Amino acid sequence: MQLVSTPVSGLNGHADIPGDKSISHRSLIFGAIAKGTTRVSGLLTGEDVLSTAAALRQMGVKLEVDEAQKTAVIEGVGLNGLQEPKASLDMGNSGTSARLMMGLVAGQNITARFIGDESLSKRPMKRISEPLSLMGAHLTSEAGDKMTLPMTVHGGNELKPIKYELPMPSAQVKSCLILAGLPLAGQTHIIEPVPTRDHSENMLRAFGADIRVEGTDIYLTGGTALKAQDIIVPGDPSSAAFMTVAALITKGSDIMLENIGLSDRRAGLYETLVEMGADITFNNRRKVAGEPVADLRVRHSRLKGITVPPDRAPSMIDEYPVLFVAAAFADGQTDMQGLHELTVKESNRLTVMADGLRACGADLTEGADFLIINGDGTAPMGGVQNIQTHHDHRIAMSFLVMGCGAQKPIGVADAGPIQTSFPNFISEMTKLGAQLA
Ligand code: S3P
Image 1 (cartoon, rainbow, N blue to C red):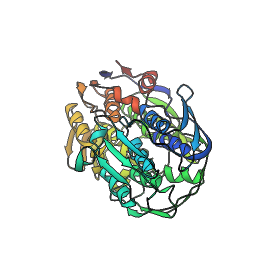
Image 2 (cartoon, protein in one colour):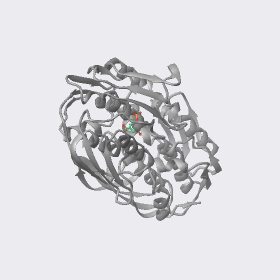
Image 3 (tube, rainbow, N blue to C red):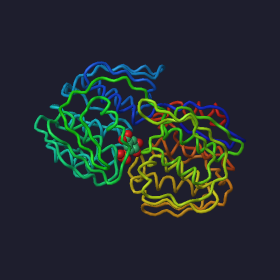
Image 4 (tube, protein in one colour):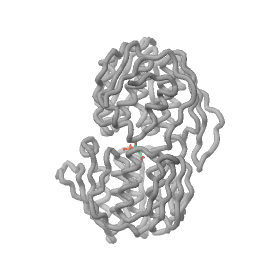
């Protein structure tokens, strides 16, 4: 589905931001292996989360999702209660589903084959197969040593907890190992190179797991039954990022985004935009289900280029594509380093964004793990109708956002992937005044 965003004279009003994707996946998975009935509200019902739900059902979990109400009810089967699926588990486009569910299956006495779409089938899975193998699970890939999907996970009772130092900052890998360790007696000890999103740790503690965090060390003693919970999912800061940048770069804009999760492990983009001079106010700061949230008011702003500290990358890893867009409108140089993990997302986001921005008239220098964008404070030209999105929702949304504030329309060749994380993106952008056709 091709979609073109035509420049507008302002975005105004409220937009509804869907539930947090990371927390939505985890609500379903943890609910599935708890005892009792877990009820979730504010659930993201995008395709990625529905892939997780379908896979859990294939393993015998009674799980109902009401897409209109954005709720789920899950009858947990307990820590060891999953059944072997009769067919392959299709993870679609979702790296989070694939990596978390492979960890989950590894800890069970079952075997499951995992498949995914063209994008997911290129993404690296060695990062989970190596530590899971150290625990005693057996993983095979139909792509051989490349270790990409399709893959089969032979889980088992013979698994042993391990101490493992993560070679890369990845909440998916961390959560995969936590899930594999949950049913095992003994201590799983994971060490992160830098702190990444800690939703698994926080949520599992609420579910009654014996999990302790000391700095970048996570200690999990498995075997403790999880107790079902009622979960309220806050709005996704990674989705709100698109509306935020759209308002900042489009003259005459003034928008409100309510109930946005602002965990310090996720809020790096907002900190960065404020340093760039963004006019964002964080109102009504409060906690929802243990997560800090706020209502955001965002107004068009004259942004200035800055150096983004590389150690902030894990707290804004999904937000770089749209930060690149903001930087293209800023006055001066925005220097972003330490971006290697961006190259192994749904697409190589560093290269795909750099190519598209260049085509839209931005002045930039791209390296293996950095991007430097030189803006002069005026809107880039745009006028490109067919930017390839490479099955990547965040590439599609970034360029549609850019089209709102650019001098000429910007279009993407395929807006379909937006359904994975932000099903109401087009209607909410239109409600604010964007012209998407
Ligand atoms: C996620 C972790 C991040 C992020 C992804 C969601 C999660 O991936 O990019 O969108 O829910 O744990 P990595 O762990 O690969 O950095």
